[in-house]
Image (spheres, rainbow, N blue to C red):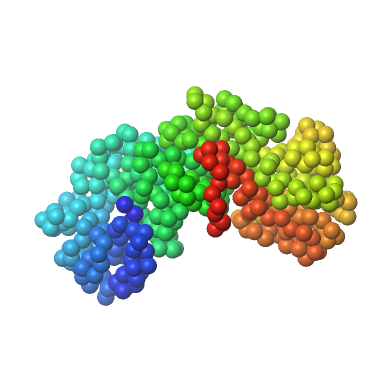
Length: 480
């Protein structure tokens, strides 16, 4: 089930949220602590105003809510609201058996026993969930993972506590996979927002329902994703998920924040993932975990696509083809003969190799000159430091920006700020969010031809789609 957490200050506003999201949700959570005082007193009327089951919640400030009432006053407000036909009531872990619980049971309202941890994951999380289940109909744990190991721990709850009705929430950026793959985590529901998140990391009900189709995930659903750090800005789910749906392929694609590649592979095995994309900074770190790699990966030294094969993982690289697609005609016509490549990471490795394979002269510029030198020697090209970028003014046809400079939160940063474009260069930034980086804005001012990261993203994504599914990408225009 997808549950919409209501954030309106009036019952009318809450009803509007439900109406706007009705096609995406199965139930709603009325947050009394968000309501104005006069509206709180009318809360018992709310379930009869809507056609979805409603969870009654009055969250204390220390648990991430807004309620500052005394416990006696809070209990009285909950008791009053329970005159209405709520389907569930949320009672916190440390609240002893009381009149709220007794009234709920007498009315047949299911009790969710919950605890919240905004600092991390308690060491005894399994036993705490088990104890919660003994005191309510449903156990709820809303915790804050800080690593991919934490994410793996939370997914394992599904197996360790298989028979217990539960809700497992991973808050914050690290918890996104748990919110989307809530059914694989053993959760009976996931909480969604109508727009602005009420809790850290909450996803909109519309995206959960239409983009991810999270409520349709079952044991046969193929799980794919993208790993990186940062990664939540990615538009790759907008490419792959609509593609899966269009060809009636039971699969889902989602982002995974990663800090340890080895642990991620353990998670991939646990979730029985069928494949994943790789972005900054793991395009070379994944290599040691692969049982087979393509010729391109071997020569480039970087992998951006991993697919499960019988008994092993296979690594491929679609960056090479995706990068070339928008500029191939300019290379073949001789418009591009000399180029600067900014950066020496995994993406740069594929790009330098692609350009050299097409006979383009390349100079690699990087802050750490030893990395630039290593990449240049492998591909028989030149190298220099970023500080010397101005030396190449008016001497190159193509400038490719491959670093993360320009991504959130460095929107106003340009890796070659001292460089002055002449207007004859082709400027190509592989960042796709934002579309217009500081680097491209400077190039545009000078009258340069621009190429955007979303062009490369879409082309390499279509190739990944074929590797994942065995089918050509359908005739769609992804909304990235």
